[in-house]
Length: 144
Image (cartoon, rainbow, N blue to C red; front, side, top):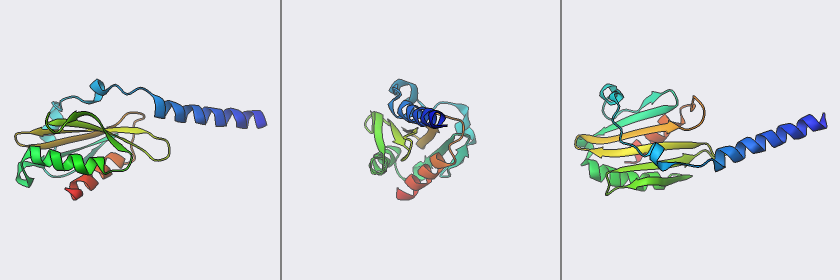
């Protein structure tokens, strides 16, 4: 019985280490948001998806570049969030936010376009995010 318990503890610790230490390839996550799902995304509303969420902030809320600069400050003030790639000057920034306990990474890309600011938050591991990406986008939207 003790051997099984020890094996389970080692397996859990190994999984935690894998999640926290897995290499991050910024080029895989810091990409232009060009897919066609944006056409179905309403303006100024968070749309939850399986393991992800989307938000389009209209230019009526401010110039897209200014929105991105404000979002950058809000995102970097979010616990366990750091900039993975990009910059406000570039017009696209990707952030990585890790969960408190396991350190699961979620990636959020914000891109300023002529018509508004586009945000896509998605998980890296698993299939469902239990709504955390949508909640984060809602919090960021409220803080803007």
